[in-house]
Image 1 (cartoon, one colour):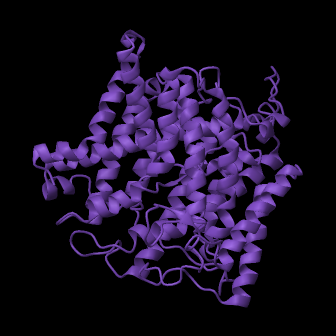
Image 2 (cartoon, one colour):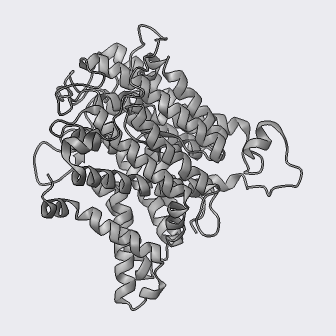
Image 3 (cartoon, helix red, strand yellow):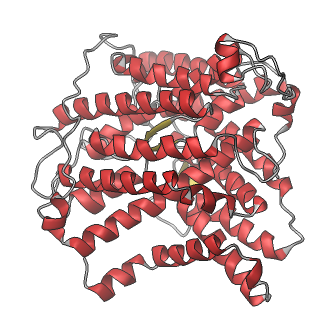
Length: 505
């Protein structure tokens, strides 16, 4: 079992008492988990600001693209689609995160899944004759299937069949994954224009531009506050870096990295948001996208086989991403049991599964659990009250979208790098002398950041673990469900050749 980081051991978890306190403390078991209401609120706020970018980023991914019939979401132009998607993204994220807090009592927030939304956009909606409603209908189908798997206990059974040290590797890999997300989103690490290397420091190997300075200052500020044991270090770092960014932009007039079409025209500019004070604070949200989905429309457009394969791809990615995420969050919070399982795992998985349905029904793509929740855990969150706070802020964001757009990547991403460090500390829970677990653990850890996919890392770990056990003559030690999951991952990795054999585009 992965041990919690030193930061988290400062406040030991208290054992439950027969006479549990009432109110918020009793409902969320705050004292029992060694936390306070203040920590939960602070953690919930930090989680929101760390992942609030999705309210802006999701519209840029699915709101700027035409479907197979040439129409945008909402049936009108890009600006209209962006407004609708932003409101829907915040609404669904808020409702589902609130449910996670109240139903599962776990500090885990949900929102539109990155990667999944890109796949839905470019891999599904753009297929000939497909509409956005058809694409969202496939997400609803996937969500219903995965919900059934939870209700029947299958998803939980698969989760419990995973060896504890492999779960630890998943947590560590996700830590590195969110670290590289933070570095890339901030522009600290970039893909070079040319040359033999896949990535480089900043622009041309140098830290050019004021936005990168804001990132570096924000990161170092959080590090200094953590070393000095300042409570709220991550939140203070995000707020302070945002204030600095607003001042820098007001003086330097730096502007955005990209133009209205998403083309990079100013590499030294701000990523995602230009940090300037908004013209207005409140804006009435438009939720007219809700309910615009067609469950069976895609089957007549692309055929049954193609539709089933698309649902399978969505299902497999969603199935394991959440497992890895909730283990990582539980480990960082010190909430895992001796088998590496977080509390209320069945309820966590149920809410996450329903979130997939809600995302499709809301026309904002599948919603899933966010690893950025670890930033709130790093600030002390241990219960569902933090999720209630995060969810409430997402709901407020439907009205306060102008304020959300103040925070640039460069101010929010230092939190991801710091949380990556905290999660990396769990690596000591893996027996590196035992090659049967060390090699699968290594592949799990490195492939997540190197492929930019949690699912790929988990799949590689499962397949190699099963293979090594077989060649070592220990096939009987492999859990039957792990056999099945490994076989599914082999199919997942070979999905394109399978499509070619079946004659599916």
